[in-house]
Length: 65
Image (cartoon, rainbow, N blue to C red; front, side, top):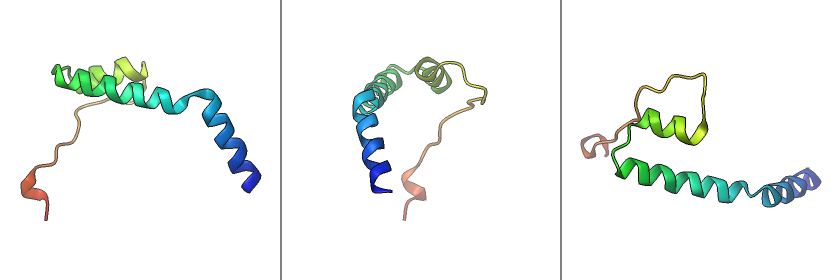
């Protein structure tokens, strides 16, 4: 198990997945600030997917304890 975790960590660092995730995160934030529809953001960042995106969830202060 430890060996597999180390191998996964090495592959993660080599593939720059962390950098890709951060770039996508900031692209999504910038697009959201520009009022780009959520479905367009998902399509742009993740390409064509089979799942249909209707809308993102919103949390209002009234629902928080």
